[in-house]
Image 1: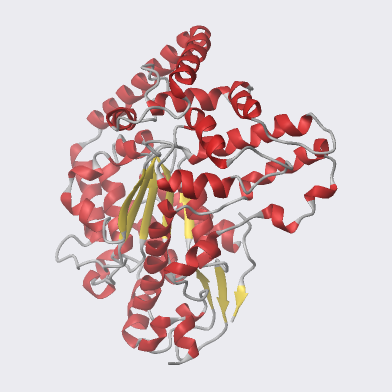
Image 2: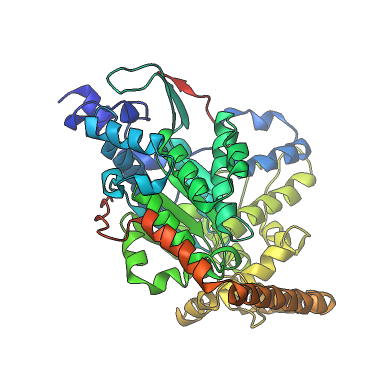
Length: 494
């Protein structure tokens, strides 16, 4: 077998410049090592006195050791990206004609949509805050496509004088939940990567057709390998008047051969999950939901995540791993984004004591939840674990606490820790209860305004908009989707 085929196994079908520009294929067994990043291994932190090491605690944000919870998702993302590039081989005459037809179009009505279609899939990663959606996705993309931008030189056989290829594009969903905001985020993301000025071109356009055409052209012309939309929330997606239009737009992008991955809070996808076609299309790559560990003994938590996170250590000694897990579970509720800061805070407490050698103690672990940095985390953990009936955080679905309660697993910190957490939260809530009530009323008022705006929209105009999106999404005779399982590198020249 050719060595090149082991680097890019898809090339067994023949050459493909878009794939050849990508990083080598990572087998499932190689993914953990590729995703792992331990910044402390590159520095001699032990040469510093303990109290001086506190400044290095900020590097915990760069520490990443993947748990088994994320590996299947990582493999799916790689398959999605590479599968999309494989399907859009620029050496294909048919593909060149397809890209040129879209690039030269000045009106979608003049383009035969069937001729533009390419197979691509979609996926969803759903989780509450702290489960590692954004951090994990960023690390995965950096590992499988370290060169986000690749500049190709002239190629007559590919039919281009030059091409700037974008392996993936990550944007945040627009906070205002509007189609215009989404289109603007996409071109702004490309401008930030490439130094282009597509945003100014978009601002000059006065109608939806022209704006949609510009965005579809731009994504296709740069052969974007994957479009990732992060920060989907209940307000800006699920409750948006334009939610159906968003979904139709994502389908239209997939129908151009560009895979789409949505990241967000479970509450963002409630309405999407009620339509079987949506679930089917976004399940072609995978519909993933990251759920907190139900108990301190859950394998991915006790044998995988916590031991790996504890490898970020600037102290000389620490308690046994079982003791760390038991002492902190009540403060973290099985959420990686809560355990990490607690572990760092415990080290901060130990390092501030100074001395020749520092040891993180059991008392330091417990004290970490009482500091200014830890109190808020403890309140979040209490709601997630069901240790409190107070629903302070509206972005944590009630079903999370219900699932934890029905699991029958007690908090690892025991009844005493739960009671203390409840009492601490209650004491904090008295001064801010009025503010919470004001915030809830403000959200209800904003939701009412959105509904009022929707009711005042001309039904014909709204339907006309959705009809345009349906045309782009290619509902009529839609194809079957393809079934697939921080610091930015400079552009790669080819």
